[in-house]
Length: 89
Image (tube, rainbow, N blue to C red; front, top):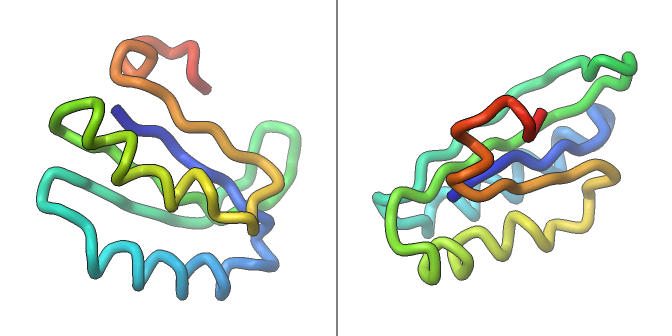
């Protein structure tokens, strides 16, 4: 289970501060990465992608803080079934 959240690039500093704290307390079953991107519509964003490799019920708990981060104006998390397709893009 996993996905990505995208935040306005101008808010990258806030996102990085959140990410630092979130990553410090994350379990070994969580893989997270981030970076700056330009979306197909030309919007510049800073994104955090996460993949939880464990029980979905635990993944829901682990990913909740990422889902609830209120810096985002664009966000989407997907489940493991969608991540096996290109439909989540």
